[in-house]
Image 1 (tube, rainbow, N blue to C red):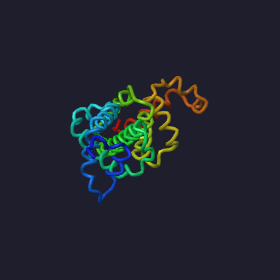
Image 2 (cartoon, rainbow, N blue to C red; image 1 turned 90 degrees about the vertical axis):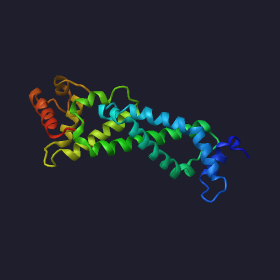
Image 3 (tube, rainbow, N blue to C red; image 1 turned 135 degrees about the vertical axis):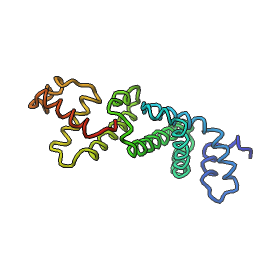
Image 4 (cartoon, rainbow, N blue to C red; image 1 turned 30 degrees about the vertical axis):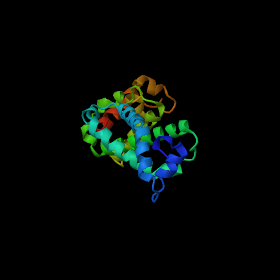
Length: 203
């Protein structure tokens, strides 16, 4: 059976058959069919993290993420259930690429937090799909929690105020109009944002 005649179900079966005689042939066919698409998904996902440092390292980042994506595909391919649907398989590949890219970038950037500037926050959210926006938001919340002093009073409130101001661009006047924060003054909002900026330098 020539490689080009493999159905998706056959391709997955042969790729995941560790001792099968067609495994190597099936993986070659898998890469022929999907490598360009996988690389496209990875590059698009990386581009949504609009950081200047990423652009300088883009080729290396793409290669690293591609390696991790291929590992994840090899690890999870046998669990893909809709083997009669090419459309659903491509959607699955996109999810694997997006998640792997987000995990990689969060890990790498969190290990190099001091290299990213607070003023990059508005650039991070530019042009993102909703799923990437949520990943970025969760990344920022998690990192703020880990970087701010544990003794910080009203930590969650201050993080929310900080993100409302810096991430979403709400001016202090609008924040103090919110029922949760209308007991705060404009100066106290500014003080919270300034204090967090002094404590972290990752965004």
